[in-house]
Image (cartoon, rainbow, N blue to C red):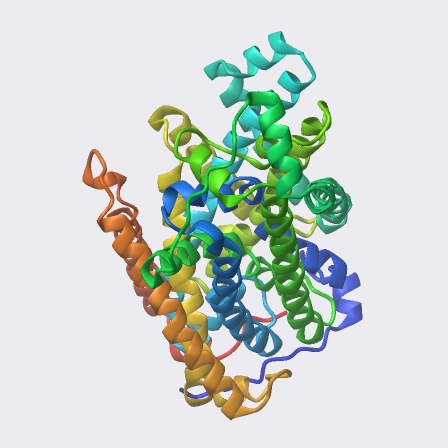
Length: 509
């Protein structure tokens, strides 16, 4: 594939500060980029998944922490690919740009379209799930009438939409407001999450057993669990979903200052920070609560970190723990909205989506139409969650989409030197070809394995109808993306665009 112009990484300060026309501006520093990835990754699921996995994967028993560490391996391999590619192609729409330039534009579009679809629906799901957490806070404060009000359908949907569109408008208003919203929320999230970590490390199994006996007259079960690779891998595949989100840093590549340096650093910081937080959080809970008790309770009802720690903590502390989970959920929204909107912007900028979607707000320098469109898709996620009564389908679609994208990122690192050697020459980190090839090959193998496990689990799941399986729904989304691509590709050809040249180079700054 020939290249007619080199990708430029330098930023013309005069153009950025006094643009001839509205465009994205490079305002995001290392902290806001890392916060984007961290807040996209950490959600309220950390308060639930490490414990409910005892029901979803029977027999995982004492191996939750090792499974968490194992799940971090494919995430780290995918992060390596993003770090390498982001240093060479620092543009908005990261993963789409990487795959379209390293593999081909069709693969780049359909894969990132399913990513956009899955994440947009997930944004709606998150908005919808926030309300029950608010309800639980009011319940813990004995505001029972207000808590009951939040359980009514109309109020829940209305409040979910209000929360969603508040963050849509914050994203439209520009990067400065985005940073002022996201960073304080991230600090508050870690502060409240540290309550769980500290409490879990202070108490131990003996303390918990004494409290359980005093409060309920019960003793800890004395069951055991033998190690099984099939059980362990199934658990790791579920826990892997907790690491999804760091790619949002790459999508913001068009707004990062000194992107070739800061994007790789931000991705590395996000992965390391989140992994350490997850491990500390899960370890501290299991340090206090025996896994046998967690497994027993999970088999009968939903269990969460606040509920488990309520046996040893003074009454009232649950409010702060639930508040931490609520903030973790809220934090997802601004970062994920930024991520999905930049994908749409990149498609439109290349001409394989309606050009109007690439419009930039004259005052705020944000892709406002792409943000609005992503907000509308998230709205469908809210309504679907409410009327279908089950939001896990949307999450499963998101996991499938992200696994496919992570797989393609590893392939992009392997193929870029052959398909686009000039762009490959701009790789600024991990420059060793042998290292790139070795790590990316491991990524292909590892992520493919996780994808197979995830699809097999979905296909074998017992559901009421075929459309409750995420895999066929994901395939329908891919078919829709193929149709959209085919229409716009024909239009590009008819308009005389040299598509070979277009997709051999990076979009202009």
